[in-house]
Amino acid sequence: MPIMIDKKRCPQNHVCPAVRVCPVNALMQKGYQAPVVNQERCIQCNKCVNYCPMEAIERI
Ligand code: SF4
Image (tube, rainbow, N blue to C red; front, side, top):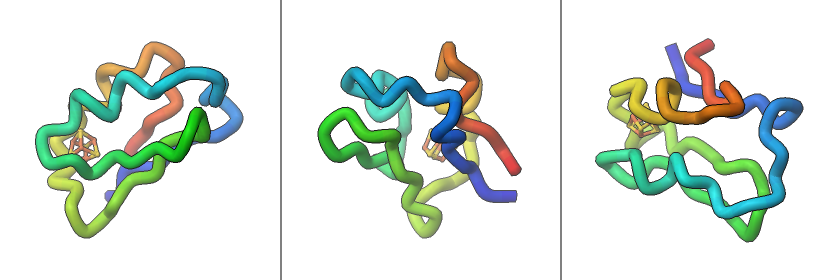
């Protein structure tokens, strides 16, 4: 089950703090855009899902 970003929930107006939470650097962000999950790197640990206060990162 992949981790996905819900762009409708992500305000896309700040540096995403969840990027630093990922233990394998699977989250990437350009500027203030919604982060993107590198599915090949992601180990589906759920840390970012549990961390995002906007609930913009979810397991599909
Ligand atoms: S689920 Fe874990 S490994 Fe995957 S992007 Fe989130 S923090 Fe990184």
